[in-house]
Image (tube, rainbow, N blue to C red; front, side, top):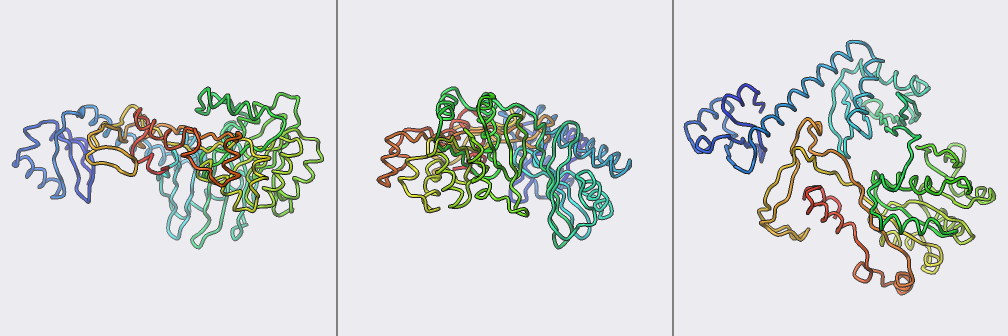
Length: 454
């Protein structure tokens, strides 16, 4: 159901929510919200699936402006889109890239199918549809993207990847063939000359001091853990930038190289050329490095080589796909690493997440109606949830905040690992769950958002 600006203004209503197919309309006037004649008039106009509510907690005029400013923004975007398409494929491609940069998207997805093509942008971790174009326009767009990367435009039946630069920002392109056509993901790396500092990634002073204490050691293994898209690479590069003072030989093995760091020797893994982690790491150890970064530990061989390097006078940084700091130790055990090997090498584990922060301009305060036993929340408490406005491009969120769970392997933790007794109840660290609940209490995140990570 689409309620036009003129109708909303005439009846003093604004779309508020939708539940089980019923459109919930916020009414400006208390008396009208209870008036059956007024409700019947709306039913005749908009259909039966509507419900009127009135709540003095909500600023009707503000919500009205926010909602219909988004409608106007959508119309502006459509006009921009139509203008860009009319100018030609190259201008259209540049328009998409500029728009993605402007709204701080992380990826541009191009879904080619049998009849048309969907272009979606990943904003604050969520995919949002940007536009739809014809099959003919899609084929032209794909050719432009391939040419921008220097790729063979005739290669359509095999996966391929490339890179291009636009307006001093770097982009990584991945193309895979599907049953309907080619699927493209353009990862926006941004300005890869960006300098990463600890203050930029939401670490508090205590967390910074702990990390600096461990990365200033001459040897040891430091792991950064979390799912894909949790910011692990940014944390690794922040540590390498801090260590990169010109006095140390730093070698980084990556798959692929995303961000360039001057003064760091970066080696890209190439499966086609048999440049694998286990092969290249043996040669890297003969290059007199003080610090080695291994993009990710995925198997037993890589884990063993990382541990061996950390036990022979090297500081080793790496990542793992685990859900918490403690589960990283379980993952190493699953790979066949013995407890004594973990104790002798592992120095620090940083587990992290990227959590969407509510837009401060349009977030809505509400009261929890029933207990949430899963999160330990009680009915009657007030929290915030997302809405939409032009400042957050209708997403309800304005950025992502990194949260960190940091586990130092002190003697107490090592003894617990040795005796297979390591649990959160036996160690004193601030967990990811505690950080998430803290964001909820501050009104930075919604119940829905933090539930994804607990």
